[in-house]
Length: 357
Ligand SMILES: Cc1ncc(COP(=O)(O)O)c(C=O)c1O
Image (tube, helix red, strand yellow):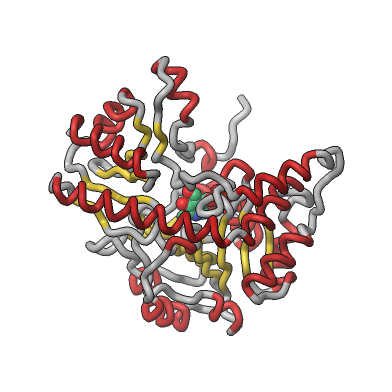
């Protein structure tokens, strides 16, 4: 009988947030809200939408595999060389590419727990071993323990900053000590998918480490604040040596022409970015206040989502919320993650949460 390798059989498939249409179909209702996948509730930038429409007429052609225009725009925005940028269909693909580039079967990668599940899956599906280091009691990365778990077999350490699902960050002081102790044959992947939402002044400037020659890959995405999750496009910044190795593993036409063009415009649309941050901050204040009044425990977030401990069975509460047309994400036994939405979405979530708790 045809069977994949044992390490593939052991993978728990990624469970995404339920699509709105699926829930509408199941419940036969038209009013649903999705606060499950940390998408931008404002939608995409209008500049990006206009540019995409122009781009459609050329989709009989393959895209520019080198993503020249997007790399140039990113290079101008962040002051890095185009050779220090790698583009992926989502930062998710870049995680996979980095693992396949720098790790071989039997090697070890280290990640926090709980953190973004793709670090684990990418490692395991490439035949690697994943070491999960629990977060500290205050839900933050335990960098000293991560360092202590590094051996000669370690290839990659993943740090989500802010962390998904907890929304906590590693501070610049902690990060500095960590990077100084990292062996130069271990790649540190700093996943900054929520970078643009961070307001905490202790957030590290990771670009500094890349410029100083540390073994670091910084990942960011157009899926979150830029509102382009459906197009699948993200970018990585690293030394040209790291980027050129990843380019050997990357598929030649891994991102579409439409996604590349939209990303260039989204990057320019600073008004859309500022508005998105403002909406997130307002929603955050409202949700904190409501959760406090309900004496529900939450972790203050630096992202566009909040990790909430409802002290009840999370799957049960999730099912009850789904019945009411509210899609959130159950995480641990008693914890859920809710994306910060528009005012009316946040209100609907709170109203329904009050009913089901
Ligand atoms: C921490 C983190 N990294 C990466 C991603 C993947 O983003 P993309 O859409 O760019 O693949 C997500 C998406 O939820 C995330 O939360």
